[in-house]
Length: 320
Image (cartoon, rainbow, N blue to C red; front, side, top):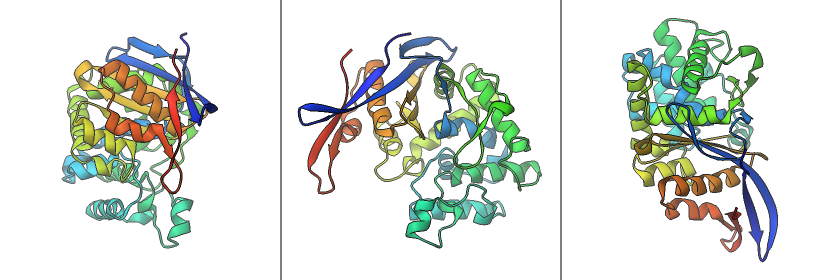
């Protein structure tokens, strides 16, 4: 095992904090090509695997049955900010499939309740993913109630897609519960990177899954704002890279990224769950893999400012 990345927060001439970050680069066949830290580290991928969880939405024919376009497919992969445009798009999608926000089982985030007591579950950052689950249930003609439960037909399809793309046996008994209520399966970090590589270069996948991955990836690139929103890394990098890099953030310092032209996937986990540290680590790994720094996206993440905009600190990957 190689040494993990160390992301340091420098305030003035001194290090204030250090964040240990594991990172793996893998190809579509599961070969680890670069590694910092433990490639076998058991990781809950959280929302970083939403593009993989959305594969059944297209594979089953549900997306076509309800004439979903790039906005809906991007939302199915999204952890959005709950901005008005996000909420309106989710509500319109639910209307299209004969559902309402009351059918969403992801709940209303407390932060949204605090600013808007009338907020519905459509404002939840996972509402697009859940709208996708409801769409699959409608298409299959199964009960929409309880669609977040491990034994529901929709979650069985999602678990199968995750197991097959990560090449990992997933035991429902070992699953935890994600923030939005669905099962979250721990898996080795290298397995997440392998699935990421497959998503961008799905040559090893069945034809229906190849088509699904390409359509979802194209939607993320075409509609990056619906993947995250204003000021977010996912949106900014998707827009700047124009298909050369795909990225999806997960809670607790997880990042999934794809470099399609190289056939490589990247998975990152910050030990302490720091999202800023994981973002800076991702910038470092992408620079190593791509040979480009993508300064316009990552410099704002490296520079820490206070509430009046004064530059007060920097996040840096320590030299190895």
